[in-house]
Amino acid sequence: MSGIYLHIPFCKQACFYCDFHFSTSLKKKEELISCLIKELEIRKAALEHETIETIYFGGGTPSLLSVSELERLIKTIYANYKVARNPEITLEANPDDLMSIGAQSGAIFKEYKEIGINRLSIGVQSFFEEDLKMMNRAHNAEEAIESIKMARYYFDNITVDLIYGIPHMTSEKWMKNLQTVFDLGIPHISSYALTVEPNTALDSFIKKGKYPPLDEILAKKHFDILVSETRKNGFVQYEISNFGKPDYFSKHNTSYWLGKKYLGIGPSAHSFNKTHRSWNVSNNSKYIQSILENELPCETEKLSKKYQFNEAIMTGLRTIWGVSLAEIEANFGLDYKIQLLASATQFIQQELLVITKETKQSFHVQELTSLIPPSNDIEILKTTEKGKFLADGLASELFRI
Image (cartoon, rainbow, N blue to C red; front, side, top):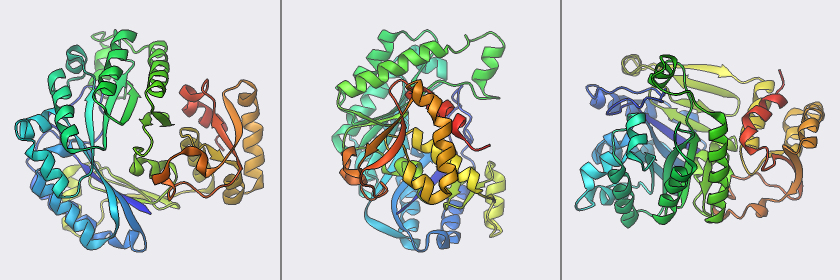
């Protein structure tokens, strides 16, 4: 099983914290969509023997595309790839787009469903006006709530994005953000700490003293609340930043973490086939020019054994599936397993990591059985509750240098 990711590189305005590739000009939108279609056609051989189980429209802001434009892309995938009978098709959408198009009749949601979209990822970030203004989001708090209420009439599978660790956000405000999601009946949350990426507006504001520096202690406090409150409300933290009720885990993102093949289409999109990783140029004009010349605008890197091992550790420690010691030995050799155990010993003693015995059935996720590697009573290295927030740092300590 594999997935296709389509990067839609357009936004109404730039969020102050964002360092993803996008343009606020829509002048090249039609031309770029034609090139996305052409790239899908050019690259179909890459997944010739694979079944496409997930399609993901990310960005950028995919909800800036019309229904007919999205439909053209979906039809192109069906025409050129072997698609599963009921694929997960996710659309990232902003509340202001959903409300401006479908506020009264809900027509936009009906049309999304008609072309095959069955999962919405709504970029809320916060339900408080002051937070949205601070981040330069295009929507307001009322649109955030109303867009979700409207979407719930037509979609069962919805996820929302929330950001924590925002300076001056009290624990009470963070709790209210979470409670709003619970009250709205949303079955999945993706939640990330606010981070300062180089060359973003937020980075500039902090350096100039126009915005307070981020507080890691505050972020950790918010993270602990997030973990605790989602658990109380029936969510499973299946990846460090992702919380889903049973049967609502993101199949697309889970395939990334379990090392499945995926194809990235569009400017800046990445692809992975287990042995190589490639990435398209992060420039709309250069991307279009290259595709029109029947050339793929990408660079490719062959992944070394060491790189593949490090990636397995990083993705594994971020998930409930952890790192299978048997798979490490099978894929990389006994010496890799021995060194991993030796490096992990100090963190096991500090109760940041633990080795447990797990079975595939213990995860209680029926729809993901095709994604989870077969396993019966195998040893798994994973983070403890105490170590979850430190997962990325712990993984880097276990890397082969």
